[in-house]
Each structure stands twice: as C-alpha cells, then as structure tokens.
Length: 90
Image 1 (cartoon, helix red, strand yellow):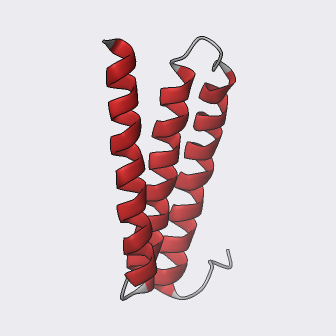
Image 2 (tube, helix red, strand yellow):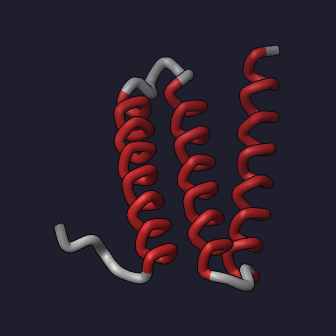
C-alpha cells in the first residue's frame, strides 16, 4: 500500500514538472519564467525527498536541502535584479 502511494505521488510530481516546463517555455514575461524555474526546483526537491524515503536514499536528503537553499538564494537575487534592474552597489 505504501509503495503504491509512493509511486502515485511520484507520478503526480512528474506531471507537475511537465506542466511547469510548459509554463517556463511559454511564459510571456521573465518573471513567469523565473517563478517556473523556482517551482521546478521545488518539484525536484520533492522528488529527491520521495527518493530519500526509501532505505537506500539517505543522501538524497542532503541534496534536497542544498538544492532548496541554492534555489531560494538564486530566485531572490533574480527577483531583485528583475525588479530594480541592477545589483546593489553598497
């Protein structure tokens, strides 16, 4: 039963990834593409955590944490750059 739920959630996440990739390719603005890229990174984090649930997947948790951290920092910098048009010169 748990294996069936694991496979179903993996399929739902894969479908979400496909939909986000379509959004990233058709996004009318750069903000839409940036948000789609961030959403795709979060979907990949979710897939890594699904793999970490298995007994042989302990290292996937560290990879998911690292990817989530880099994704947050990258999206924050990209949003700042797209909003202001330049990086701060403090």
